[in-house]
Length: 67
Length: 475
Image 1 (cartoon, rainbow over the protein chains, first blue to last red):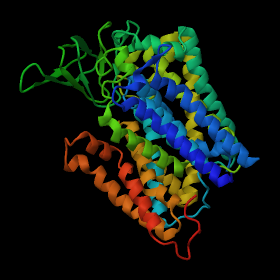
Image 2 (image 1 turned 90 degrees about the vertical axis):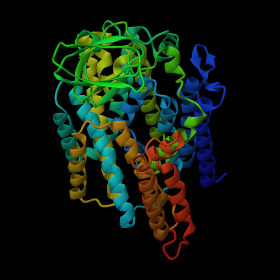
Image 3 (image 1 turned 135 degrees about the vertical axis):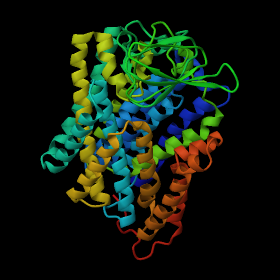
């Protein structure tokens, strides 16, 4: 995959990661309010899962292109 | 440009302080704003780079956006000064002088990267110290807070012990009875909702006078008013319980336009404020993660310990008040100094990066930067809401500047900017033209970039790219 195509895919993946947060919070029946180990699914997502995934994805793409 | 310099323009003191504040206050949009503040600049880091140079209209839009973002930072500096017990102007003046000094000092650029790393390190360490002392790191503080049946004033709260000051004009809604003691002479306006139509009373109180409020009453206080509350009573304006803090009742499908507007504004603004780096690429995402995670940790720790920290409306209150309340006066003072140092370093690196963005998009003239700093400092003297000002600045950046980055040529950039300015102005004027409109209309007025950005991009793309195709548009 070319650098430009890889980055385009990365941007789309980041936008999807971003869009999931309001979906979890605002969807009917509030799926984001479900508790896992005491913390809501929404906050697991915006505080841990999505930030780590997004940062790792950006890192991989930026390092690959720099290398 | 290195990734460190690229993300410095994004990691504004106003943005990080606002995130911590909104999480402390249990605002319904805090969760996706925190994620947006991280992901938006990551998208910008991956977006294709454009060589510098821009038509004058785009340069003017860039200058306006940067000036407003700068004003938000100065408003936070003014809030810091009031939280330390002084007037607003010394904080704003110091911040403005720092913004001028870093721009004029040739060696500042060399020190920017270590300064940014140090600032974020300090910001991350301070909540860690607070969490360790309180025995509640964010991952345990969150569930404890979410289980609390009521969020009340602690006996150790500043609002209870010696009273505290409101940073700006505020209206508080009381859900249970409360005796409020005035600690400064002034007029206190109470709206009683127990009868229709509501009764409005204006009380002129002297220091020490007590106002008894009933459930449902609204109290309006002016900026600078000092009051004391009773311990054990619910915090007015704050979520009623831990469950409400964790899952704000306001969340629902009605908020979709506002959520989309906020995220489009963040992504659009990041596209122009955060240029694609050419070197040290790995540092950018890691610093963004550290900065946003630090703000998130501050917010959760502050809400768990003292949910009234957001009451006064000063954005840096959770950062500056929490250490002394949890660690005690002496240790808290040390952490407070570190936090103040972190905010000062963040301001310095952010202003330096903004100056570089201004030079790339408009003009490198020091006079232009100085004029922007003076105007922004003038705005910073007023007790405005720094978050509203910051979202306005990011909205202008997203609406009037971002399409130029996506356009194929200068004519497209001009068309995009023109469409955007008109759309932005029309939507921003909505509250004045049609007050009390539906929620989606309010969302458009608050985040005009939601409509302005796609329209501007369409206009920019619709125009054919003539001889100027591929020519520089904006950096």
